[in-house]
Image (cartoon, rainbow, N blue to C red):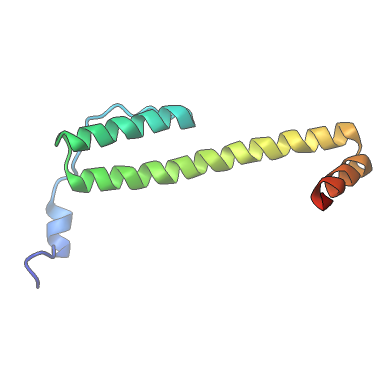
Length: 100
């Protein structure tokens, strides 16, 4: 085994590294601010690279979910507007926009 590789028992035996960090994840804005704080902490050497990489990956996954949730909300609102405007009129308007 290469000296840089960890065996399965080494990984299992090593304690989980805890990030004592306040992450605010209620909105895309607060998540971006948490990400910025995380980057600054890493730049100052307050957190290890392995923890930083894991947190960056987790935050990217989370922001993807937030984006999907926002898109679903927009689609619901669009459907309501289309119903209020009348489906055929709305479709003609959209088709006219696409042609231009």
